[in-house]
Image 1 (tube, rainbow, N blue to C red):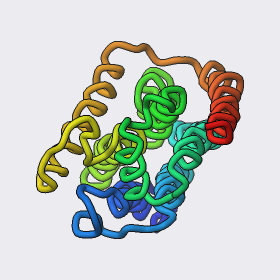
Image 2: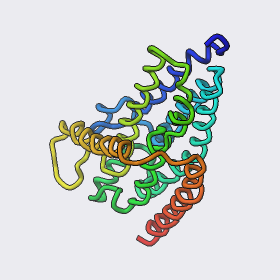
Image 3: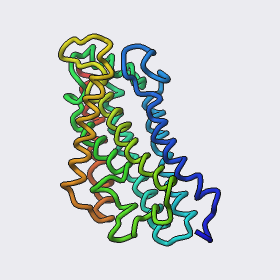
Image 4: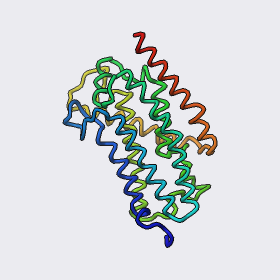
Amino acid sequence: PADADRPIFKWAPALVLLSAVGLFVVIPFGEGDALVVRNLDIGIFYALAISSIGTIGILMAGWSSANKYSLMGGLRAAGQLIAYELPLVLSVVGVVVLAETMSLNGIVEAQAAWGIPFIIPQLIGFVVFYIAALAEMSRIPFDMPIAESELVTGFLTEYTGFRFLFFFLAEFANMFTFSAIAATLFLGGYDPIFFDVPVALGPLVLSAKIAILVFLMIWFRWTWPRIREDQLQAFAWKWLIPVSLANIAITAVFKVVF
C-alpha cells in the first residue's frame, strides 16, 4: 500500500512465522537431550512467551497497512491475546505443581513416574489450554481478527504473495506446535505411558498424539460457527479464568493432601 509503514509492513509476517517455528525449540521428541533442540529448565515459560510474540506481529501488520479493516483486525488480535493468554498460562500451572518442574522433558518423565498422563488429573486444565490455544491461533470459532464477513480478511487485507504465505505457514505451524505442547504437557509426550515401546519410536508416539489434536482443530473449524466479539471476551473473563483458578486451587489441595 502507498501509505503503509514499509519496514514494519515487510517484517511483520516474518515475526509471526518465527514465533510459530520458535516453539519447536523446547519440544522433546525423545528421551534425553538428543531429540530436543534445547532442553530448557524453564521450557514452559519460554513456550508461553514466544507464542505471544506472534500477536505482536499481527498487530504490527494491522497498524502498518494503513487500512481500517487491517487495523481493526490487529486490534482484535491484541484484545484476544490479552483475554486468552491468562487462561493459557493458568491452565499449565496445575501441571507444573504436579510435575514440580517447568522443563518439558521433566514433565514427560513425571508422567511416566506417575504411570498416568496428566490429562487424567488435569482434564480441566487440558480443556482450558486447548480452547485458549485455539483462541491464540485465531482458529474458528475464535477467528475474529480475520472475520471475512466483517473485515474483508482483517490484518491480511493488504498482503499478497510470499508475505501472505508467511501468515498461512505460521497458522499451520502453530497448529502443530500448540498440539505438540499440549501432547507433552497432558498426554505423556513421546512416552506412551501405559505400555513400553523402544526409545527410537518416541518421535512416532508424539507425532501420533499431535495428529489427533490437529485433527480436532480441523474438525472444530468445519463444525463450529464464529462467535461474536463480546461472547469471545465474556467466555475468557467469566468462564475460562475462574475455572483455571479453581483448577489450580484443587490441584494445590490434592498435592498437599496426597
